[in-house]
Image (cartoon, rainbow, N blue to C red; front, side, top):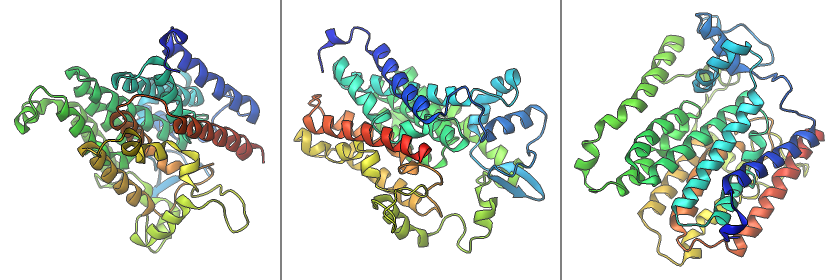
Length: 391
């Protein structure tokens, strides 16, 4: 697997394999990437912006925030920025499914670069990049460009690009990594929790590892700061608060006595993440289940110090703390997402799990356990996705 001569063009091999796997899902389920997107909230929002409006027309089948008698797209808005040129060209009939697949492809290529930077040979790099994309629940959301899935796949790509830039050691890429993670926050707000890990990765690779070395590079924060100002200004213009992007004004949260986030949700949602089935022995289609089956790379990440026979380092513990914080914030949300196979909300932390595998496992070998877990993740997600849409 690690013989470079088997992979003369490893990135092309990676792209071809991902395309084949997605093509299988498209054909097996009948959901082709050429079909119209019924859940095209981001394109509708981009069209409204081009027409000089912040609100959108009412659509009964879309989740829309209701504020002062107007309807707004309730999801973090950055994907609409990316869709602006496509909406200008095609109207709201944007190629959402293909753009979402392209984002997954970019994330996979960034994963390849991270594996290469960690010293792995091309075959192992292809393996790990496939593991975190096709061998995980990401393949389910990257298959279609529905609004929920597009946001998560875009966030995955931006976060992987951020970590790949941070571990590169190149100042230009490290500077851009902060911008990429800010864009990821514009897709999935809880990715904001990942900044301490990113700062630590950058600090590790500076010529002088001192607080002053970071302070002298204050201008690196200009680009991510601009993203933050845009997001805050848009929130304030629409909802009168720089931190409100619209979810609190969805009817399901307005009608809930505990609101969108509450510690009362935490125990129940933690159970949802680990359960294998519902009371009727059916695989849940809402709120998630058994994240360790649909994303077994988490098992590799948590076991990485044992597999490498090294004591956990600072990066390991920092990443674990951030992952736990992300898990707690996620499970304090009223729902864990609707209408999906797997445990969709925990896809957001996949780049952290992948980072642990790359940075903590210094032996660079693909072990038998890795191969077994990769095969299990691939089979479970491919079969589960087909089952979800056909039955």
